[in-house]
Image 1 (tube, one colour):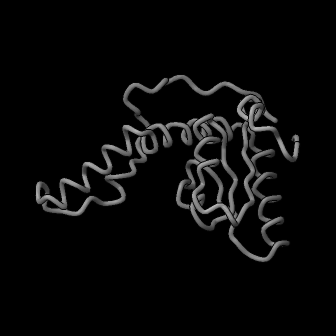
Image 2 (image 1 turned 135 degrees about the vertical axis):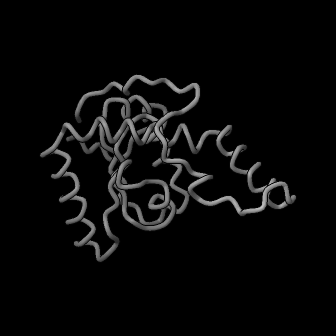
Length: 155
């Protein structure tokens, strides 16, 4: 495990490519873009179950630590990271699912498809409001996405 602290933005992607897990304990990040970036690189996100990051992952694509007092969050992260360290064979498959989830649901093409379905409903071209399940698919297949696993080593 490596805890680098502040990393220059210009070197961040290379640093993340050397990793398998992305620990993100912030409770002030409401958008979660950094979590999507890590997932797109095939990292398993470990996040606090609060705000935007909590809406981006599922039990299949990352680990959400319950929000609580500082010592509870620290304990939750310790437990989550220990579980991953004790079961390293689970990391790569979860990271691959996280990557597929981002490619399926959070690219510009995916966003355009999602907005189009909402417009179709508003314009009366479909009778039912698009469900979250329709808009954010959990299926693994991603049209045009690389099917090989994301490479990397445990960090």
